[in-house]
Length: 320
Image 1 (tube, rainbow, N blue to C red):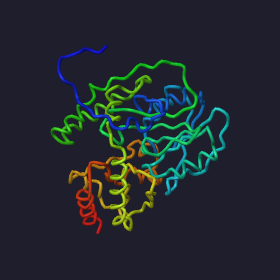
Image 2: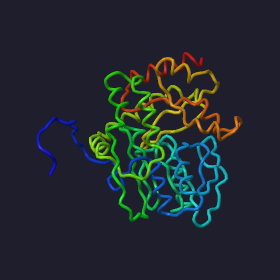
Image 3: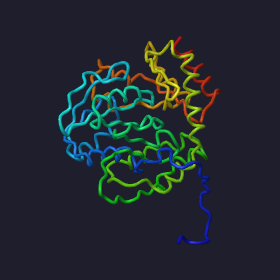
Image 4: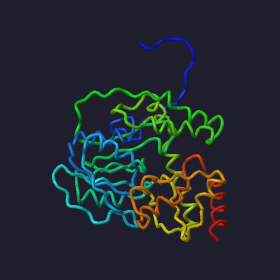
């Protein structure tokens, strides 16, 4: 029995519950990856150079060998390895736009494929393919991971607590994004080097209250609006299919124009995916150019036609 009376709490209206209803709910995506490595007892994984450094944390923690591979301009792996026993191939479903590649790799590697869907929250996990997701890349939560893995660990993991890492979200609502940025960075650091935990009750309740259908529609619409104008100026050719839900619009100008700096000066905050790539690769590598020069334009549910048109106007002025 919970306590009765006292002060009021947040009133969060539930919608349809978890989007990934059959998944294991964990605290962070890297914990989902660690769970897979533990459950499968992998001795070696193949990892793309173009991915988040956070994936190295569980690899190093569990003393798993790692070999990096390159991707081409279509974000597809180059020189696919022949996997031995206790080896896995990790593929990042880039920007929620590469599900066809996931299907191809699943046919080749079967249950030795691990899909990193941190950037592809709405893409379904394929049957028998270990897949993990990140909630905070798509929604206003501090943490959260969904995991699909047929191999279950017989371990009772503790439940995470998120209330002390919500400052950046609350400050953003009251004072704007810049006001909460330092707290955001602190939250990112706090997720590192933690044991595997279950998703917090706070995060679970927040995720249960999201209108996912509306978000999917808005993201697709915003992506298509940007692509209709910017496609001819973009080195990248990433099609958003009817069933895809993009995380961002990746825009790599055909000529390097200092566009990323200009966008940030105009309070259009574009992330770098990922700074570690420029340490892992030489400047002549494709992945280095992606990390250094690509502008990942926001297309998420906070925005509509007005914001898309403002970005288009600013970009066209800069690149022409």
